[in-house]
Length: 244
Image (cartoon, rainbow, N blue to C red; front, side, top):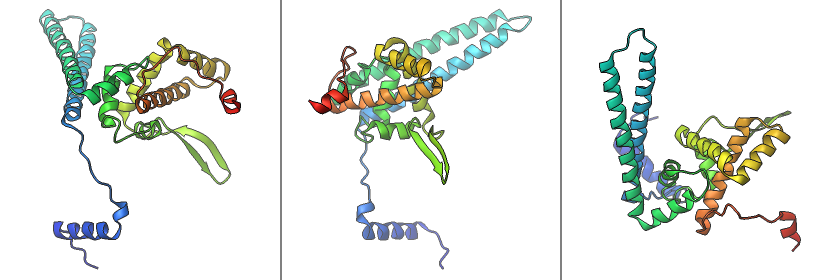
C-alpha cells in the first residue's frame, strides 16, 4: 500500500469521502464577531484573575517570613490594585459588547434572570454555545462540561450512573459555583439540596452536580421559550397534569 502522506493526497481523500458520504458532512458556520470578542475578553479576564490569585498567594507567603520588606509589600499592593481595576474594566467591556448586540443581549438577560447565575457564567454559556445556536440542549452542554451522568455497566457489573471526569474544566467549575450560589439564594434549589442531602443522604458533590444540571435545564428552557425566570412559579404535580 502507498504509505506516502502529502497535502494533495489528504485533499483527495477528503474529497472522495465527501462525494461518497454527503450525509456525513457537517457544514461549518462561524459565530458573529461579537462572540469572538466576548471569548477573548473572557480569556483575558481569566488571565488577570489567575495573576491576582498568584500575587495574593505570594503575598501571604511573604508574611510568613521573619523579616518582611515594606517596599515589596507596597509594590504587591499596587499591582493588586491595578489588577482589580483591569478586571473591573474588562467586565465593563464585556457588558458593552453584550448590550451592543440585540440577540446576545436578549439571551444574556434570560440566562442572568436565573438566581445563582452571574456575568461570567452567562458569558461562558453564550460563547461556548455560540449564542445557543451550536449547542441547543441542556444535555449537550452537560456532556460538553462533564456534568452529565453516564451509565457504567458490563455483564453482571452495574455501577449505575456516574459523573464523567472528561469535560471542559472551566465550564464545569463555573456550573458548580452557580450551583453553590443557587443553593444559598434560590429557594427551590435550597429545598432540593436539603431534601437530597438530609433525607436521601446523597453525597454533597453528587447533589451539587445534579443542581448544576437542573440549572442547565432551566436556562436552556428559558432561552428556547424566550421567557424570564420566575422564582415564584409553582409547578403543577405531573400526575395532576396527566389526568386533566
